Amino acid sequence: MTELLAVGHENYLALDRVIAVAPPGAAPLKRAVQSAREHDRVIDLTSGRRMKAVVILEDGWVALVAITPETIASRMHALRTPRVASTASTP
Image (cartoon, rainbow, N blue to C red; front, top):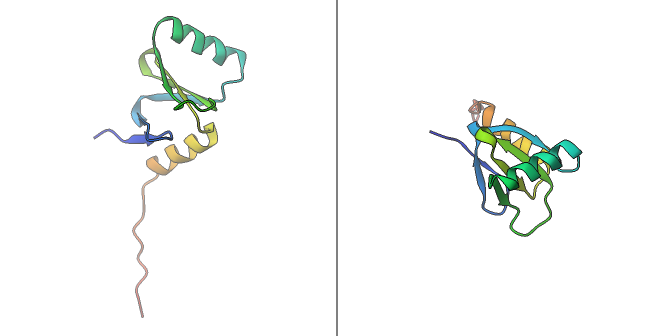
């Protein structure tokens, strides 16, 4: 089953399709977004808010999101880290 990564405002991405997450300010990222726009491969998940991160997906798709790369990374880490059940017993 595909795990879904919450990227804010009731939007989700398939975790196994994420290749990279970065802030949108760098010139190479701006070029990647522009190229994706020209090829109709942009998914705008900002819900009208300011873009704070660019998520590069498989097959050349680019997702624009309104949460920071750090937040996305922490959510990805939480999904990929196995959860250990609590073994505390009550006296």
